[in-house]
Amino acid sequence: MALFFFNNLLGSIISGLLSSAKSSSLFLSSCFSSSTELPFNADIPIISSNEIIFSGRISSDVKQFTVMAAKNLKSNSLFGWNCLDECRYNCMWRTVKGFEQRGYDIPKFHGKWPFERFFGMQEPGSTLASFLNLAAHVRMHMVYMKKFPLDDVDNMVLFWHLFAVVCMNAWAWSTLFHMRDCPFTEFMDYACALSMVMIMYIAAVIRVFKKRRTLTTSIVVLSALVFAQHLVYLYTARVDYHYNMMLNLFFGVSGSAIWLCWGVAQWVSGRRYAWRVVAFVLVSAAALSLELLDFPPYFYVWDAHALWHLATVPLPFLFYRFVIDDLQYTRRGEDTKPDFKTA
Ligand SMILES: [Zn+2]
Image (cartoon, rainbow, N blue to C red; front, top):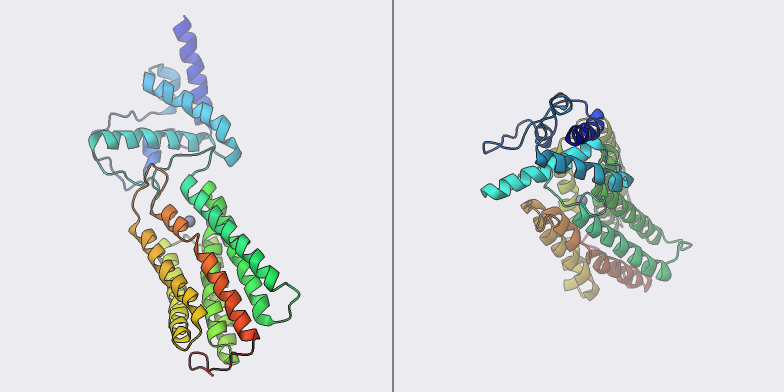
């Protein structure tokens, strides 16, 4: 009798957990994208809600699995984890265990590596690293602000304030996206990441070709149009991640190439402070290679993407120092030499 009530109680819990699911065939099938096939004869049950509620055949594994999902749902509701998400998350770990036991490579689930949640945060490594990048920009913007306050009338000074705001905004959205992935945070992360890449490219154009007003204005307007068009694309279309990455790479590589050539030329011509912008470009490129390697997470926390974000934390300290030195150099009236042979 007691067993009957227990089974009924569990049936109710499971029924509640499943009620928000659109499909009755859940768990394992929902863990993988449709093209993924299990490389072994799965002994993990594929369960339908009807089977659970009416048959009363519930394995001890499934009981444990379901009770754990119900507990987690309560503690993780702050980050918007719903019943289906909980089921997917717990199913993912059951599947990962199955892969580990059989010595297979760990797969991605819906395009993401399996990550251990931390207080409801979906990707704790990337969240922490994004937050540290944000903190680094805030810190260096404060240093910059002390030397060049907002009431300064110099256009270049104001541009660097705008640059800092764009970067801080991008890292704030990156933190939120890695904390909890949903369509809106994904859109904001992608859009703001491109805004940061593009403002770095525009910064290079404005600084290096500053004596060619028509050229710089044309490039800035064109870049703004490309950005606006890409925002509409990200918001309305099914995103082609490869195309999105290529667009980021195009502006990233173009900006880096301008900074690198100009920085080396300045350093050779005696402006020694330019070493920081050269180092910035080289460290950025080395850090980016981590992202391209795309390996699975160490300790289910630190994947290639998280380590890439972590590697970029020192970069603002280099770059803002360069910006401050460059503005001070320009202010001393020593900026009379031709810039990158453009004047
Ligand atoms: Zn990221």
